[in-house]
Amino acid sequence: MDTIVRKARRRGAPGRAAPVTPVADPRPAPAAGGRVTAPTDAPNRPGAASPDAPSAAQPRLHRDAHPAFPPVPVRPTQVGIVHLGIGAFHRAHQAVVTEDAARATGETRWGILGVTQRSAAVRDQLRPQGGVYTVLTVGPDGASPRVVGSVTDVAWPAEETPRVLAALAAPTTHVVTLTVTEKGYARRADGHLDVDAVAGDLDTLLREEAATSSPGAGATNALLPDDATGEATGAVAATSAVGLLVRGLAARRRAGGAPLTVLSCDNLADNGHVLARLVGEAVDAALPGAEGDALRDWLAASVTFPCSMVDRIVPATTPAQRDEVESLLGARDEGLVVAEPFLQWVIEDRFAGPRPAWERGGATLTSDVAPYERAKLRLLNGAHSYLAYAGSLAGCATIAEAVADPALAAGARALQADALATLDAPDGVDLGAYAETLLDRFANPATGHTTRQVAMDGTQKIPFRWGATLADLLDAHPGAPAPRGVVAALAAWAGYVVAETRAARAVDDPRGDELRAVVENAPDDVAAVRALVLLPGLLPGVPEGRLREIADAVVVASATSSSTTTTTNEETTP
Ligand SMILES: NC(=O)c1ccc[n+]([C@@H]2O[C@H](COP(=O)([O-])OP(=O)(O)OC[C@H]3O[C@@H](n4cnc5c(N)ncnc54)[C@H](O)[C@@H]3O)[C@@H](O)[C@H]2O)c1
Ligand SMILES: O=P(O)(O)OC[C@@H](O)[C@@H](O)[C@H](O)[C@H](O)CO
Figure (spheres, rainbow, N blue to C red):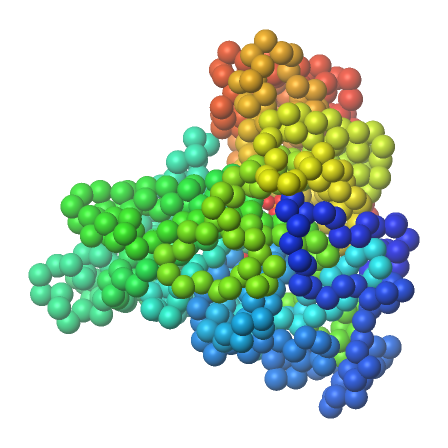
């Protein structure tokens, strides 16, 4: 614990930055004096250890025996929200706002069933705890813990698909939220659904629909039908997020068709529209003819896909952080998440049915999310990704180390300057000041956000974070030279990919094999950099005729910064 607190103080991390639009942050402020807040009654509750007690034999955190830190976690009476992709971010963001809204209104019907797609880890962390977990907020003045109760349970589709489908179909569920990462949307480089990646789920969907629509299917369970062979198709494990969602939507229609809102909370531009299109493409692929009409009609009439912009820096939790927090809590919390103080959620107010009063928990409901989303993706996430690649090449293990390097901070500002020229400010917002506060947030060392984590999945992020800025600039100023900030960022990414490949390390990216092949097949690093920039789908919207010129400019920038010959932080980190 002390380590987290000391780090926050030593590096002079900034306070809460001004959001794109000011919202009241409902979270408890970090304790004054840089100490973690332990309420005075905490050590007195049964079985609780003092904050200084050794951590070895602490009991597991549980809903019925949580530490006595205020506020008391809410205790939902039913599931109203199904969340696909319950990683660290959802737990520190939407689940917290949902709990604050529930506390403000007294409503208990907005419990969250979390769904974890790729492994059972989060289920195994939270189920033994009755769903509760700690959010440790770490800022310049210290760290403050809070136990959150809005998640009722977590399910893993590999073993529990019928349960998830039943929850998606239940009329008491009104909202599905998603944070399944950019690659979780299973898009091809051209942005359309990668049907092959979800083929298994689409095949099951076809069988489920056929089993319930065929003559004589009257006795079939509409929710989890047996197909013609008698197999319970609903028990077939879903293997993709989009496939699970579409099967759940189809089950909901068959089970009565109560309206539903599907709310993407991932860092994708236009996330709601993107998801709606992918769902439509999945239905068309599985049920291309008249057999899909009932589902298509119901989706159009009863399901909405609002856009949202989400913001809070929430890195992956480390085992050391769990150990440090254990003695503070007097309990072992395997579901701990660590986050910065800042939190923002802007939601398009386009719901198909009831929703939690999220505005009472600090969210902003608006008719148009686009200006917020664009500003955040290009200024925050754009600079973040640049610092991840350039920082990694410079041997920085964390984003905080990278932004502390004046040359890298200047690079981030140059990229932000390019982005600022493309943005319309949301009402009453000074985007220049916003951009500067972002660098202060990145400088918070206490979250320990690593350059490697932010560097993941570059081919999925660069199109929104840098590509959109580049396309808009070239469109607005056709004769202007290639923008300096974007070019330097692309040089950093290409340099990172080349350096990783030359060091025989796989680049953590769904197109990692393709990236490796590009580098290995290139005669030299210069050719590799050029080929990487020309990768299909990386810079959508940039006219074909200008792509080569951009690639040439990136090659020149790479040579100037010698980025491809620099070691990455893997070699400098023990
Ligand atoms: N962490 C942050 O600071 C932050 C901030 C804003 C937005 N977000 C958004 O939230 C997303 C998740 O972040 P996180 O910190 O929770 O990550 P995480 O790694 O902790 O969790 C990711 C979740 O997505 C699921 N997932 C991963 N790959 C998938 C795939 N191919 N198909 C289906 N599901 C998949 C995992 O099972 C897990 O449940 C980010 O990618 C981003 O879009 C994160
Ligand atoms: O979460 P990702 O992988 O989309 O991106 C990594 C970071 O840029 C991102 O998580 C930011 O910290 C976040 O978007 C801040 O709100």
